[in-house]
Length: 370
Ligand SMILES: C[S@@+](CC[C@H](N)C(=O)[O-])C[C@H]1O[C@@H](n2cnc3c(N)ncnc32)[C@H](O)[C@@H]1O
View 1 (cartoon, rainbow, N blue to C red):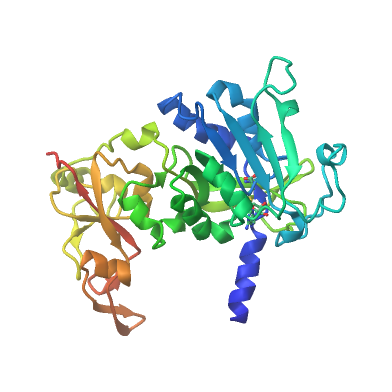
View 2: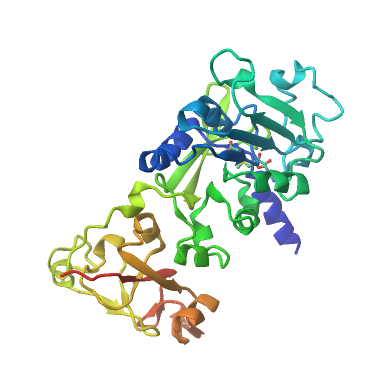
């Protein structure tokens, strides 16, 4: 228990990192390229944000008119509620405002709202933003922020990774459109995978892999952080966008070779001259690399999780996730003997020749082609 608390605290510390503008711009362009009207007439909520310095807020303020937004709402979490001590005081934006209240600045969340050209100077920009303290601390789970969620059409943010499951459930229960950043591990969560399988959630249009974030001044210094001017940046591996907005990449079919050609020409030594193995405990072939999926295979195939960044739902059907425990049971994998360091045990995750493999996603061609 003590250990669990400690690791939770450590993880929570990692919540104070901020997304860079070009990463947001690239991702939003993937949706806009596919559908220029994707945000037109919409209300966007950016929760778990810091409107005063967030690049999410900046992006949607600068592009408010171009993308045709109806309303932008951005909320922040109170400094006092955060897991790390935010060393910075109020921004000038706040402290110079007539609404500034020293008794609320650290204990309350804030809400920024943009609805159009309030200043009547002919353009929508930062001067048109209206702001207030929230009644509470801006926790996304509060009734106050829930009401904002219910008002919104699209929810976009980089949420606290320590609360990712809860955050996603919060969006899904309200049946909202969303674009959120998270760790790829989330794919196999029991709350997330069924959404992927049912095409209610997929990976975003760009990215996948490691991404650099600006870290707050209160975050401890760590090896590998990059310093640029006054700012510190840290990279996190295995990050991806999760969304239910459509984009072009998921309609591009993967170019694949037949089984025979993979055996002849595959660049992977595990496949070339060897072919495909079948699992000890499940009737499917093991495909160790996404680009080695045989185009003509009629049955089910186990592929690495990274397949999802190439997944085109018109080309493939997702049958399930092949993982020890409930997921293995669900696809009908049986328990089989595995040997680890000479010890035998029983397992229903993917196994070949008594050797356990990494989690797999089980897929099928919609129309196998020769
Ligand atoms: C990963 S940061 C990203 C901030 C911003 N969206 C960005 O990308 O620049 C997540 C933020 O969520 C805040 N946060 C943590 N727990 C929260 C909660 N329960 N409700 C709302 N915000 C929370 C953290 O303080 C942190 O500032």
